[in-house]
Image 1 (cartoon, rainbow, N blue to C red):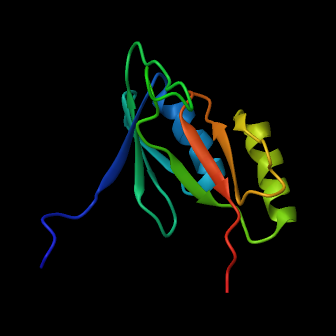
Image 2 (cartoon, rainbow, N blue to C red):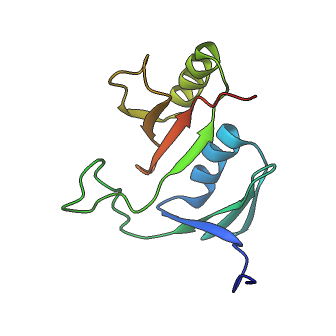
Length: 130
């Protein structure tokens, strides 16, 4: 059966679309293209378009809560297949302004959870390529 439609964008509400698009361009690649101050599009190489939309009064999700203002979605990024690549990606996202949300058992889990500068959760994942 043919799909109803194709996914065009993942739209992320945030207080500063230019700043958050620049953050994710550093994490996932690509060049943000601002249509105006309220709407910035980032074409991720080999991936979907992320679009950042100004949302006055934006309240970030409270991770990992589900009872009040819980996470509505999160992005997973392939950070490499080795722990060295994961550690390097960890250092880079922290330098870009991410903050850790869950580093418990970081040496045994294949993912680490962070908040972007606007408070949205995202993960760096260790993916065994092969």
